[in-house]
Length: 246
Image (tube, rainbow, N blue to C red; front, side, top):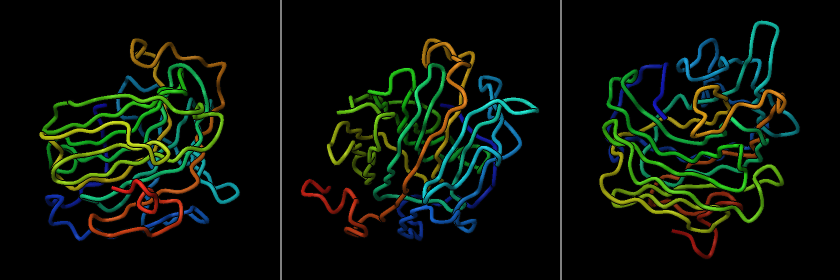
């Protein structure tokens, strides 16, 4: 997906970033780590505005909503304040279900940050919660996309999803199972981390026709983590603690 408005930061090559590993279980929303998107939409193809009112904490989980509000439809997104490079990016989430909507965990940097568009995606098109899609962007060009099937729909239970990014390859994982791999050309710039839930009336061929009867919707996130390349297991549920660790 083409993206983004927002905070302009110095962009360095991924290999030269001061990469700080973290594990965030959302007992609180760390405003030194996360910025809540609020007050705009990324383009006319979205049918909701990012709103802080659509972002909440509940029972130790981050909840991103998509719902109709008094002033129009709103949706939730967080983005990291810092930029991150090579390493392992992980999330534990449970999605809603609804045609015309998208639950995403991805990294991105682009023209608004003074850089060409680079991105690494995990997206669940919620018309089919049994499948996950993957993409990379390098210099504004999308390539090496793929998809994989979950062993249970993403709205039925929590799943752990991850990608491991090195200078040579990106490998995506679902519940510790390697499911897709991309090689050169790969993104090179350090990127911000995003998680979001949004809808569209116009991306019918890609996301299906939007179903307003599915609202309100909530994407639940138990935790998000980043482990810098070369570092090992930092929390029990991490991909890097498993037998098949990259």
